[in-house]
Image 1 (cartoon, one colour):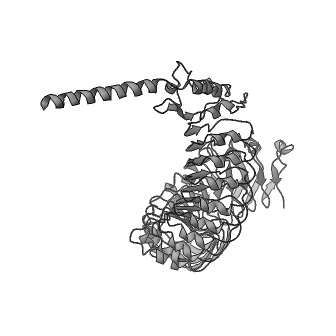
Image 2 (tube, rainbow, N blue to C red; image 1 turned 135 degrees about the horizontal axis):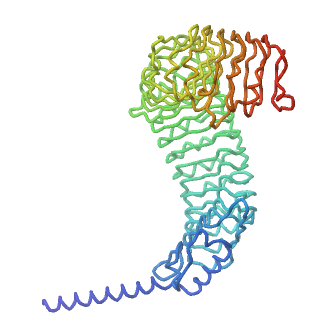
Length: 579
């Protein structure tokens, strides 16, 4: 009995050794005809050696960027990003016909190469075993070949970032196994075909940045596995179909920058997996449906620049009932929303962006806003908000980078020794009743790049510390106040010599007096210098000629004398010295 078992074990061992020898031999040798085809394909890329090591040996299965199955057939070919281009060299590759001899190919990637506007060869449709095809960023032109509809095993198709024109082929209806379709960033026109609803396995549909028109077809509701629908940057019209509520697996819906009109359908409340909703810059009207407030997985709600009406506080109230609130970004700016500002901000602890600007909100801003410790951007400008903004409103805003509360009826009331918990880069507090003292709390804002405190009733002079802040970028507007004193003797530290953006300085409509200091200017880049409507006297210093990139200077309505500097005689700078 033991001898029989030992014999059986020996036979099994020899069997597996034989299989291993057989398969290892197969793995070392590729099909001869396919080896020749690969060499021909490589020849279609003139400078391929710059991005691909030399192919050595007879076994093409061991070559870089080539993959084979156990029978030695080539099933993977990755020729992505292998060309070389420079300012002096333009390489125009071609798809060699030998590629289509690789009938077992399942994965083909030639993305990131240049084909000089050539059309996609229809013969790719003969590679019927393909499961993944990536032709993105290849500078292909022409129309999508109908033959791509023959690739019935295809799961991933990317034709993005080319110069493809024409319509979405009707033959795509045969791609029943397709899971991801990327046609974005092309010149594709026409309508989204009604047959798109037959692609029942699709999970990601990316058609953005094209010239698609017409309506979103009702059949879109058949795509029950769809998790991402991205159509922004087209010319789509009509309303959102009610059938969109059937997309219960949808996580990302991005429709911004189209011409979509009508109301947001109540059925959107069925999208319980939805994480990101972006329909900015359309013609949406009506109120925000109450059902949207029940989508507790939402992290981003971007509805700005539409014609949406209703009371925004009610929408926030419904969202606040979620057991776990995941909301990170809310952008409702540029609509016709009304009523009081939302309350109970403490329930949105993760919120990092809040934009309610350019609406018709009224009432006061709740102090609970100050509990949003993750908030980076706050935009409340151009509403009808009233009341005081106090230190409590900023109490825990340690992450704040952008704030704009301008053009309301608000008054910022903080103590002179207040130190903000934030170090913002952009502060817009135009018409916020900051005066009459110059706000001392700005002294610790060492990351500041843009400051607009115009029209605030400030009747103070600039403190010396202000010009010693040594900022990285400078956009400064203190116009339409009652500020007095002399202009700074030097901007040497305040305006960096190396900056991404040219400085903007607006001191107009104040009571600054005395001469313009000769030492004020240096070799700075200043685009706009506005000193009009002050009490400046004396002559215009020639040192103003050292300013680089000056596009406009306004010195009108002062008591300046003398002549314009000679350097402006042939300058392209727009100069206003008198009204």
